[in-house]
Image (tube, rainbow, N blue to C red):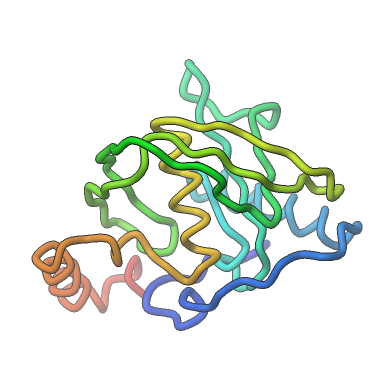
Length: 172
């Protein structure tokens, strides 16, 4: 089982490298990421969050019944945001920053080009929640965390809470 690395690990600040080999090793890794994401109750996960600096991420939003099903899984390799518009504030959390949530300003709509697990080119237009998750996970691939997008005041509040809870298992 893959392990989720957490803040303040310097690995989370690494810029991930493009994927060139779409082989069985990649497929097994993506399957492992999916298992970790579900186990940790995440809706998205990037490869760097499990200590692999490659440009891969997964998104699986819950359906109407609140369940995540494999048919809704989006496997995203080498993503690139082509278009972005609008503005939305969304309460975000992160598997790598456990137990902390904050409103973050994002684009309301994005168009993303990417490859699937076999290297086939794809495009998707996302809005609202899905657009937010795409932006959050792509930020991870660029070494950016959602806490970096907070105002100075909110960031100081986070840092204070982080220091106070440092001995708590969730913050290790």
